Length: 101
Image (cartoon, rainbow, N blue to C red; front, top):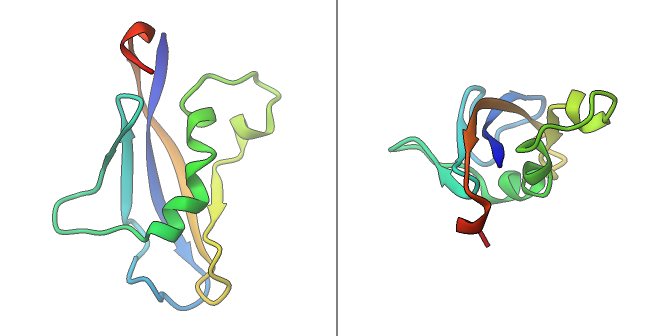
C-alpha cells in the first residue's frame, strides 16, 4: 500500500493572528499517522482540527476528477483570524497494511 506524506502550511492570514502562527509555519503527517512539528515551533490545535478530517483522503491517490485531488486549501474556523492552510504531498511511502490498524 502507498500513502503520501503531507505537509500542512500556513499559506496566509487574512485577519489578525490570534494563535501566533505566521505564513510558512507548518506541521507534517508522515508514515500514515505521525505528526511532526519543527522543534521550537507550535501549531494551533483548532487550525489542526479544521484540516484533520481531510488528511486521510489527501494521503491517498484520488481519481483525477475528484474535487479533493485539486483543492488544497483549508480555512481555520476562527472568523477574526481567517488563517488559510495549504496541504502539500511531500513523498509517497510504501507501507504494509498489516502493520496498521
